[in-house]
Length: 263
Figure 1 (cartoon, helix red, strand yellow):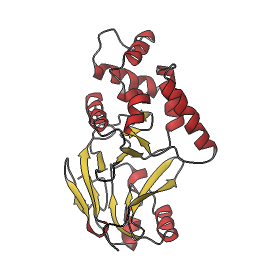
Figure 2 (cartoon, rainbow, N blue to C red; figure 1 turned 90 degrees about the horizontal axis):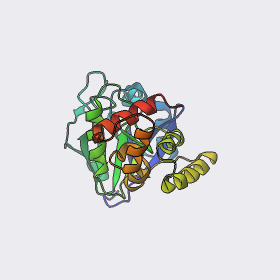
Figure 3 (cartoon, rainbow, N blue to C red; figure 1 turned 30 degrees about the vertical axis):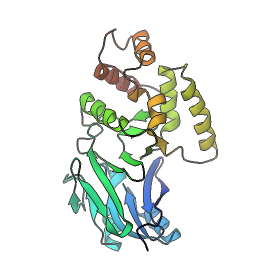
């Protein structure tokens, strides 16, 4: 099959709210964050695809537990962080490394985005305008800080926010509606966010994924990418979360702590 064959992305729902992503060219496929082999194998069979690589963003089991089962059936390269907690990695990647998938003519840039975990990697298919960001950036939200510092997570999110607005965001969980409830608590008068909530609520009512999102929409509706916005700062001051004059990292930290306890 020619390298000019169009490349697409298949959504693989798993567990309660995970998504694994299957990048393919109708013959070969790369899976991102296979926390369970069974749904990946089912998708490969359904679409008659041959697995040629695995990409891992970080070490949490819901992103990695299917790797060894897949390797028992398909001997393929596994790209991911150099972390001994991840079984099966064959190609450790670090910041600005290039991941090549020759059979698909696919090239991806690896970016270190610590915060959720210290080993977290995001993968960018620049030619296609795709971002596979694991649990760093979510639709209308961001990952919890299990290992990294607020400074690290803020820097990681700020890096992702520099990508073109049209960049599609393939994150790893269907958290969008709950994230938007918090975002509206922060910015209840954000008209773009209110419109987004209607669209995505309808998608979920019809059992459709709300993903991928895009960077432009996130910058307009995701409070964690809006730490310099007067409306976000004003809301945090109103709720007694920060003092006037707080810097962006302090704003981010207050937002993340607020979200941690938000129900």
